[in-house]
Each structure stands twice: as C-alpha cells, then as structure tokens.
Image (cartoon, rainbow, N blue to C red; front, side, top):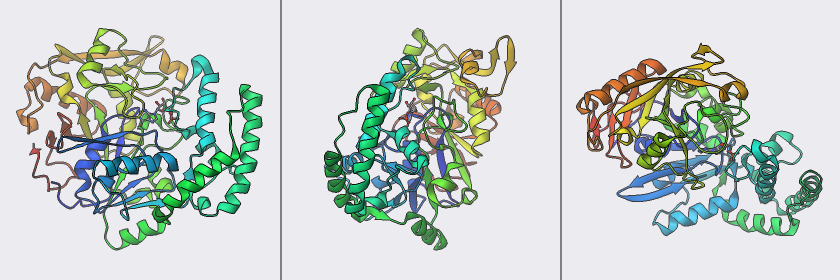
Length: 447
Ligand code: IMP
C-alpha cells in the first residue's frame, strides 16, 4: 500500500500510449483522495490487474476500481455515453459498482454516434495516409468542439427538447457533408441518434456535475488529487508526431484546461514508459523493428491493444523521444514498465540520437517527413538472462539490468523511481527517492 501522497500528482505516458499507466495509477490510488481524467476519451485503454483479476477501463478513470475514491471525468474529456454505460455495466458484472464515486463534467463534450461514423469514413477515404485511429470518434468530436456550432456538451443532454432540434440540424448537415466528401451519407438518422442519446442521458443524469467547482472545493478542503493522463505525450496534438496524433493535450500541461485546476498545482509528474517502445496505428516510429526482433518483443511483452486488439508495432527504447516527452511535460520522475520482458535478450538496444540525411540530432524533428527518414543511432548494451519478475529491489536486479536503467536515466534526464517487472501490483519496485510515492510503500519492494 501507498501512504498519503504529499502533493497533486499526474501520471502520463511518455510515448504513443499503452505504456502501462493504468497499473501505476492503480498502485498510487491509495494515497490520493480523487482520480481525475482530463483528456481523451474511450480511445484510451487502461488494464489493471487486482488479485489476479483483469479489469479494463477506457473512458472511466482507473480510480473507479476503488469505490471510496472520487473519480472525475473533466471538461477536457470527450464522453461517448453509450460506451461509458457499457463500461459501467461491464464492471458491475465483475462485482465493481460505480455509483456516487463517479462525476462527469457538464462541460465535457459528447461523442455523438455521427462522430464515430465520421471517423470511419474519413479514415477509409484517407487510404495510405490514414492515421489509424481507434475509430472511437475522438477526432471528429474535438473538431466539432473547436468549431463550436456543432458541439454538444454533457450538460446539453439534460434538455431533450433543445437537443432534439440541434441533432436534427446537425445530422442533416453531416449527411450532406459526408455524401459530398465521401459519397456516402453514413446512413445517419436523427431519430435513432436521439433515441440513443435520450436513453443514455437518463442513466447518466446522476453522474453529471460541475466537476470544476467540485474539484476546487475538495482541494480547498485538503484533498490530494491524482491526474490520469490518457494516450501518450507523443500523441499530443500540439507537441506530438503530428498529424499522427490524437486530438487532445496529453501531457501534464493539459491538466489546467482539461480539469479546471491550474496545472501549476501539480507537484509530481510521473512519466510512464516501457523498457522498449511500442506504437499502434500509423505514423512515424523512429526505432521500429520490422524484423524478427520486433516480433520477439511483441510476443514476449504480449503487445496487443487493450482498446482495439491490434498487434502493436515494437522497437528499441527511444531515448531521444523520451527525453523530449520528459522536457515538454515537466516530468519529475519516471516509471519504467516491462523490464521483465527483456530478460533473455542477448543485447538490448537504446536509441541515443537520430541521423537524418547524414546529420545527427538529439532533438525531435517537427516534420513527419523528417521523422520518417530518421535512422536511429542505436547503442547496444549487454542483456541479462535471469527472470526478474520476482525481484523486489532495484539493487537485486542483475548487474546488466541495473546498468541499462542507469544508462536510460542519464539519457532522458529524469530519475527512474518505479520499475515494473510484471502485471501484478506486487511486481513493482519503488525507489525511496520517489517524490510522488513518498514514504508509504509497504506491500511491494523498496530499492
Ligand atoms: P484517435 O485518438 O482514435 O483519433 O487515434 C489517433 C492515434 O492515436 C492513432 O494512431 C491511435 O492508435 C492513437 N491512440 C489514441 N489513443 C491511444 C492510446 O490510448 N493508446 C495507444 N494509441 C492511442
């Protein structure tokens, strides 16, 4: 268990998502009073193992697995009511009740059924340039939010009369737009959209609140908050590998806008990465291994998507991109996941620089064309044979694994204070230097 945390903390992914943030949030949860989602939507997929039981959440904060914690979905999140209710029902069938512990911001935008249709049509039309989205309607929903005239917020679901009028207009406009652009109006029907929304709204009603006011109230009363970042820093719409990104701000900088609590309130930012790199969907992947070594990492790490089941692309650890994520996100400490996956590899690669057209750099280029022609400069360090999945202290790791961690730390410019060697909570080493965990870890090891 973790003791009471000393300050508001954010957990974010340092890569393109799927770093294992769910496990870290779950591990830390005990020390916080509230868990807040501030970005993204059901495109995220957080897997948490508790007592050998697997729980998967997408839109819900991982905090809902702890009924005594307040779980908030902030204004910066995009909410698909149908998928949210499906998640709540799935958890109920596993014995987890989501009730008054969950509050959803009335300012959050709604992922409407036509956003999912738009996501599918636009990806199908993009051919080879497709982003490889999760098909959850995320991009079209955020686009409508920024466009303003077509945005629908959770609070709008509470006024069925006004909503019906707007849905009528928006669906007509979307059908015309889809037909003109894609030659397919998506089969949209305003009555069906309204039927789905009014049914969902009724069930969602008890969860809807002004989460901004609630968050401030709780914080003023002394609550310590854990912010749960979705997706990953390299998918950030402003700082990521654009246009192969998601449509929200995925770093801790997104907290201010996405939750209503100023980002400067956050004391600790834990960046989560794997001991290697993965990516799902399209886009540049500078250290990708398209050979047998990539397959070996995928099988060893069971790298298949939580949200879509897609096989993940795999490659060596990218210290250039990770250092970039550490810097832009104000990361104060790093959790490295899946160290156990690399056991048995004769040597382990780390990308220390990019070579682009014969020039070396340790900065992340902004243009996708440059990212795509990166030749990674890989340093190979000796691997280790030992199974490390039961190791409880960093000092007890094989020397080669310790040397690997030391090398990565010096390249990325942040301390690795948490090392995960398996899916279970207990398979986690937390260093005494962790500011976020403070002094309270007793059930798992300490290094
Ligand atoms: P979207 O967020 O569904 O629009 O997808 C945009 C890109 O981000 C695609 O490459 C997705 O695979 C990727 N993506 C979005 N969320 C996640 C995530 O939580 N994990 C991994 N990839 C993600």
